[in-house]
Length: 401
Image (cartoon, rainbow, N blue to C red; front, side):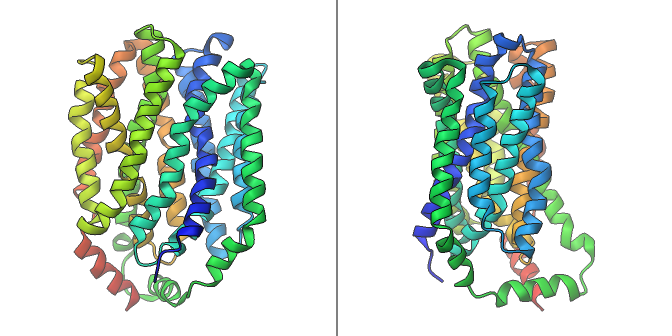
C-alpha cells in the first residue's frame, strides 16, 4: 500500500500548529516568572499541569478513536490548544495560569490519538517513515513555539499570547473544511488486518503478561525520554537566563536549536527504523544522551551549542519510532497505543520537570543537568529488554493465528 503524502502533509501541519503551544509554554513561563514571582518548583508545576492534562486524558481519547468515528477531535483539539495558551498572558494569578495550561493540554490530548491514527492509515507499508512525516510536524511546531512566543511578546507584551488563538483558530478552520478528506482516508483503507489482529488479541491463547508487558516496558522507556526532553525544554532557558545571565531572546534561540535539531532527528529516525529496526534506534538514542548530558555544564561557547543540537537530535529522533512500536504491539487498538505513548508517556515529562524544579530550587540549576543523566541510563537499560524486529514479527504471527 502506497503512502498518502497529501493526507500526511495536512495532518502534519495541524500537528505543527497544535504543538507550537507546547514549545511556547517554557518561554512564556520565563516572561511570567517575574510577574508572579514563581519559584522553579512552580515553573515545573505549570509544566506538569499542561502535560498531565494531555497525558491522563489522551488514552481515553485514544479509546474513543478506536471505537467511534471522532475525526472532529482533530480541529477541536487544535483550537482548544491555542485557546488555553492564549489565556496564559491574561491570567491574573497563579491558579488561573494553571487552569489555562490545563485547557491547552486538553486540546493537545484531543488532537493526537485521532491524528496519529489517520497518519498510521495514510502511511501504507512504510509505517515508521510515514509516522516520522506526521511527527516532524509536531516537532517543527514545538521548535517554532519559543520563537513565536518571543515574537508575540515583543509585539504586544503579555497580551501577545492572543496570537496563539488566532493561529490555531485559522488552522482548526482549515482542518474542519478538509475533514471529509481525512475521514475518506479511513474509509478507503481496508480493515481486515486490524480486525484479524483484534480477534487475535481476544482469542489467541496468549497470556496477558506476554501481550502487555512489552507495552508497559515501552511506556517506561518513553517516560524516561520525556523526563529528559521536558527537563531540557523547561530548564535550558531558565539556566541561560537566570544562571548564566543571558537575555530571553538568546535562551529562546538555544531552545529552538534544541527543538529544530529534533525535527532533523525525527526525519532521520523513521527511515532508519524501517531499515535497522525500531529497537536499534531507541537503544542508540539513549546511549548517546548520557555523554551529551555529562558534558553539558562542562563546556561553553560553540561546543555547547553543538551539544544542545545533538541532544535535541538524539532525544526527539525516536518520537515516531516509539509510536509505530506501540501500534505494532497493540495492532487492534491503534488509537489506544498512540494515546499511551504520545499522551500518557510523553505527558509524564511534566512530572520529571516538577522533580527537576525541586532540584533547581534546592541544589541549583546546574544540578538539574547532572540529575537528568539518570533518565537516559534507566531508559537504555529498559530499551535493551524491548522485543527485537524478529520477536515483533513472531508476535504478530501469534496474534493473527
